[in-house]
Length: 173
Image (cartoon, rainbow, N blue to C red; front, side, top):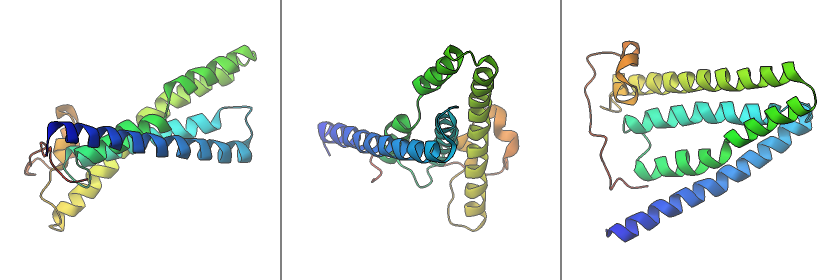
């Protein structure tokens, strides 16, 4: 496959993911606002925390070469989740609360967003590692969950797990 065709496929993957991520974000935002109102940015908080969970889960799978190849990673992480989550909405929600003289709700929103996002990433990584380890125990894969996390977090993992190559550029979508 030529380099130009490969680049075009990558670009189309990001575009398709972004299109679907934008729609998912919009529909979920409408649903949450319909249930909880829009006096506090519950919709943005929910979207950003679920997005943080999903990006960690999918990245961990991709790093261990499970389920997600390079094109799927572009589709999900850059396209879908890039459009689904947004820091600018977090900032706008915070400013809107502050403009309405709601200091404590604004601070609570900022803290919940940041800590919730970090906890969601850790939970997403943990869930993926558990799935990979169970797949490995059942013989469904030889991929290593230890590939998915930095050195400092390898204490969570079995040190005797084998490694696989992460560089499968031509993996099919």
